[in-house]
Length: 113
Image (tube, rainbow, N blue to C red; front, side, top):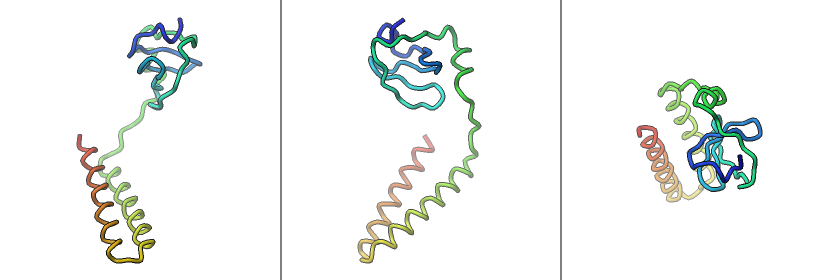
């Protein structure tokens, strides 16, 4: 079967990897979530059932929320220190700090949804 013959959302095997067709040219790798351009004429093999798809996708244990937040806070502090060390003007430091804090809050909000 050719890639263009698949329905959008259909799972298939291409070069011994499992993908899901996203649109007329793009697919998403089942394990990594990375997008890949696939030629319309590429030879693909539709997956027969969800068992084949699940077997190809690596399982990942979810990290505890506290671990993710601690890692992000450490990253945030490193970024803040680097940015503020590079900004000699105190007004610029305040602006950078405020913008970095906005980005931090936006990230935390996304984690909640």
